[in-house]
Amino acid sequence: MIRIPYHRPTIGDAEFEYVRQALVSGRLSGDGAFTKRCQAILESQTGTGRALLTHSGTAALELAALLGELKPGDEVIMPSYTFTSTANAFVLRGAVPVFVDIRPDTLNLDENLIEEAVTSRTRAIVPAHYAGVGCAMDTIVAIAKRHELIVVEDAAQALGSTYRGRSLGTFGQLGIISFHETKTVVCGEGGALLINDPSMAERAEIIREKGTNRSAFFRGMVDRYTWVDVGSSFLPSDILAAVLLGQLESADELTLRRHTLWNRYHTGFEELEAAGLVRRPAIPDVCEHNAHIYWLLLPSVDVRRQVIDQLQAAGIQAVFHYVPLHSSPAGRRFGRYDAPLPVTDDASDRILRLPMWAELGDAVDEVIDRVSAAVRLAVASD
Ligand SMILES: *Cc1c(COP(=O)(O)O)cnc(C)c1O
Image (cartoon, rainbow, N blue to C red):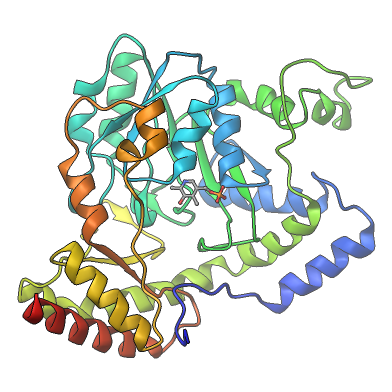
């Protein structure tokens, strides 16, 4: 029986009250009052020009790929160590993901390997900010400028994180955030597109609204609305936006509590790292993160299996993470990589993510003790 799950969302009274208000209002479809309030908070919090809620982070990525006008055969540089949606959104447009290795300290796209992956067909770079810790955005943006590429930041895990004091998701022309149940701020399924290039804003509204100029119509800018471009339905219901509003209003507190836990883990595993038994995440000086994930690299895939089993037996749920996309069946079919990705393969084998949720509280000490004991035992018997 799991006593301490990997993740559990924290739902406050405001979420219940806002959902009640949304239901009572009778305005249940997209782009109602709650959606507008969420978008305004996201805009002021991140500093993006325009934030549009979507029904998932995946949908925001698909919207970004449409806006970026990716065409069959175009190449998109991205990490292999990421979620499938990072690649799928572009594969749906016929583009080819080109997988590049990650840095060992942050497990983020290695900015020093990007330029050698650029070809005449490269159109975009899609950095993913793993665990809410920023990629080297100054270098990535400079490479993109040099080669006239667009940058779409997969900031799915990074709401509340900054790089050199600026919000993640606001460095590229486009950025995306996820509010999936497992993220830091949640509404079940949800996401947002951050539009940092103002020239893309109008088309983004159209594509998101089934290819119509409905948004402009409601602002009184056109006298009737009609089909003007390709599009789909990327809006969330205002009922979900009501949940999200409650979450966004308590985001600072939720993140603060996660930080306390993250720091307790980090201090708690100092000794184990000094003994050479684990590697802890390293946060670059220029990054402020949102404590989305606390991870450790264990000595081997075997040790990890034993540690997961021992924790499970003690009622603690700890989990590994991505199967690298470059070696997955679909990744091999749709993507490409020009050089081996040893850091990706290694991290994927050895990573362990520990329980992380705002109300975890003092159970964090038990997790630290159990993990430490399990690692020592597994290493001794390996
Ligand atoms: C969660 C996540 C997504 C997808 O977000 P959904 O809201 O679940 O569609 C995309 N990329 C990364 C890196 C993620 O962590």
